[in-house]
Length: 474
Image (cartoon, rainbow, N blue to C red; front, side):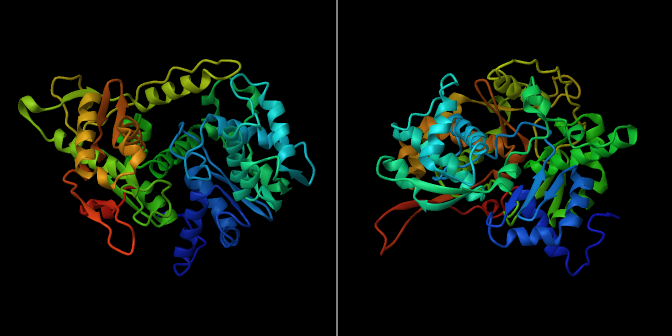
């Protein structure tokens, strides 16, 4: 029997699980972020949360009078949870750089700061970084800077006391904005578990059991493997057995994993022959919902259906089968790209290949009898095939797509494939993509274009009828 939430009565368990989902979804909670009731909810259950999150996941919850900060243990490099601009788009490298420089500049100011003064301080640091800079005479630079400031404002690190950041971004000669600085929240925003100046590779930010001060020893190693397995299921749309080494594979298959995660989060763990998934039908824990609204999500769903249909072909029309890069190989590739930008380049340690299970596929992976024993191969679709299918989708359903993406199919395809990869439905490889087992959920998707009626102006939007679309994956 799971010992999670031992101090919580059955009548209060749902409220406790709501607090768990809240702090997992928003690792930084303040008096105003993500809403005014959130901090009180977390503080009510703070003691139990600290115990369970550490025991189950190896996460440390740090609370103060005005903040609750979850320090996650990072097992991989995840690009699926970006900071977002005022328009809801992911931060680019410039915005991330401005955000970090803004945090540094705020540490040198008092209780208040004017936006123009803060921009000058950031510009003085940015000019020393090759290829960056911040020219307040350029509207794109001002917009990027204001996006970084707004991100901090939304979390309460800065509070607008007077003026308007949007007006300043429009014309800094005519407008200004004044901010109060909350140093407690600033400290919670940037709370690294390592001395960053000592890092020679981004991978040093991983293996966080040591960073959080967890004990060593064989028993502790088994406990850490169990935590890692739970994190893998919690933090990803699906945990494939094929990506797990032998120790982690045993933990993923252990009954205790499902018991602990279900009692902690209130969600359902689904087991299949090829992996484990935590199902969030409410969307209250997931940071990305799929299927979802918008042109990219709709195009991705229709593209997933076409790939899945192609996977079912047999005989001479069957797709070529190729091995997927292992999780370790994908991690190493991401690390190399990041480490290439470090002032002092380190080396990425060689990672061992992860074991594959020998089990019948309930997720409908196609296995080639001619490949090496224990190596799973996946159907491969080429870039040209994908472009052709997207062209068909635009031709049939493009009336419901955003005009800018409809007119730029290469960009739409790239974004749709990125979304499918983020949901563990495909792996992008040189020359195309590999279809992963979870993709089978979306075969047979149908769609129709529905014309809006008055009083709105004539327009069209894509609506999806498939039952699968009503139950988002985790």
